[in-house]
Image (cartoon, rainbow, N blue to C red; front, side):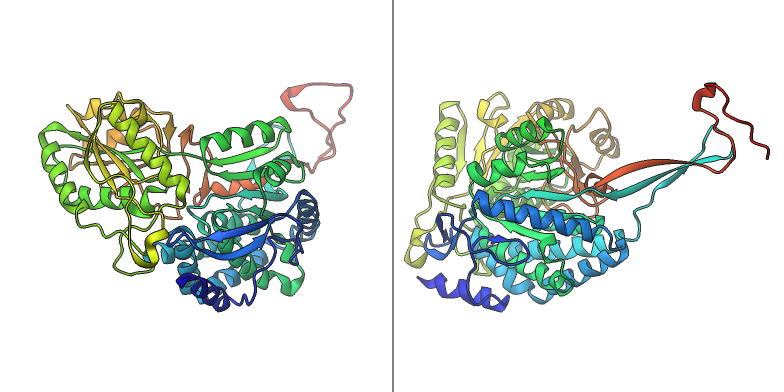
Length: 520
């Protein structure tokens, strides 16, 4: 078991000598739930074991998070930012070990594992600056000797449900912003990636515990049926931020909206790159390669479709075939690897079912596809061949998201046809166009262009920076996380009117008895 020792080495570098049970309410709870074997997709071997939390453990976690919120909200926002600055610095100290842990636990290549931790560091830096910028407004009043103002206040404990593919960054997007907003968190990570969650929680809590605020970053691992359902039903979580499948998001929205809570949903994507005849093809090829193959096609922003004008379609297809033949698939901890494994055996089976449908619907597999059998220590890992498919836009499977490295190449007549096909899918997360024509570029970014939450020109669909709000439309859920003014989702808005006169005039000029005269 070559990676059993490596896992514990990474954890020890993070200050974790022994694995805890999977719940934290300011202290680690001795949970009574079922045991979970944590396997690495790199080799398929068990690398750790934890005990899951139960509904009883969730009650302790929710109570602690709520009680801590009542104290945390009283800390001035710039001082909350100072805690987050220190959390970011702790992440810097452990970036290499955390990056390796991410790669081992979910199969990302090492460069992407490191990049994910850097993203958590970046959002901490962003949140520190934000902590001094929760600006309200002053608003003119129609009434004499009155003025109005708008303020933003902490919301409460925030439920955070994350998927396996970004086991650190998505929590950090929520956590760093929520903490400076004055909120606390209850994190339910994917059961496919609990070790990174334990490590991130330990690091954040090590900063907060010095002043009794460690429950601000509470954690509970557990099943969807027992823990997840109870979380989304609980009114002590006024906001639930959930990342995952569209099916999961619909369930979260249904339950949380039923109690009039707030949802922040980041769901599926079916992202396309439009390539016009005047595009820089080499630039397009590099962007498409990273978008389609990065994280083995298991990003919500992964490139799924390429819509290319017929005049350059063959040239683009030939170039993609050349570069796909050079992709090294294997151990993600090997610096030479470009694509690691899928997360588990079910993900491999899902890709194989998708390939069967592609053939049945008339798609032509040009390259790759299917299970890749490796030898030696990697023989038990979940490896596949990245796949290129010449497809038609009317194929049913093309309109679905398959969480695997399958890329559909679709020829189009012109920009207008490409845009129509681009928008004709249920999802609306990320999009891109490659062109030198500024008019086409601006049209793509206009109200009648891409219907996605993210639209890029001359770069790919994957790899968003933290400065902009991240999220999408339609079945992607409409949520916005990370930068820009996404912080507003984590706070409540209050409008106040102050009367500094001696009379009581009413709005809209309404007279109701004697409002009194203002002698001044």
